[in-house]
Length: 282
Image (cartoon, rainbow, N blue to C red; front, side, top):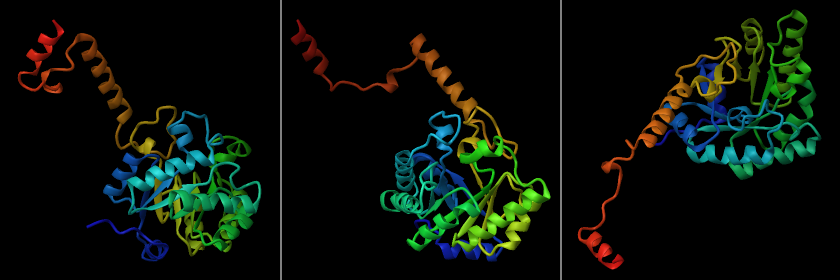
């Protein structure tokens, strides 16, 4: 039987039952297919593909068209999984109208189930307008990569009482604006727990401790594919980067030596046709 896709109600009830929800990023058909087969509850088509796929230094260069293309591929790979499209930089900050229009593209063109956007209180109008347009919104606070320059780089947030209070106020504003869930990134577990207990909506973490309502990780990190750097909160479950390099190196070696391909890797002519061919070539 096909996997049943979660609804917003299912997701909310999981929080109420204190069931932790696992989810992961995916950027292509095959990764999404594996994620669905593994039983992931949600998939985020994160703008992190800017670094993981395109080799950008950050997420800022990512465009709406790129996000739509990758989200379409992920939907094809995981038709029965709750999929979240990540709103890229300047797709929602310029105006409320543009935020609604671009959010709508995710739903119309890529058939996502929700969108995610970064920012707290300053994004209240955008969140409310998108929700009023009939779409689901996930908020994102803490370390927000699109505005990492303002934060002084990719650094943990909410480590003092003052900054933690700011995050709590942001979380409350996001819930009040109508978001169905919240992602908290790179904050102390104590702060994540306070936010989780303070809000009625699910609060998910990445680098925010075990007591969040669920965890998301970047697929390239946990697979050991992304090599540029490894955040403190990442657990590498494999090192596919090293294994991929080994395969490529062995393949190149066998091609150069003539060891590959062998007879079992080739196709045979129909019996008797080779003799006919040679006769015609004389």
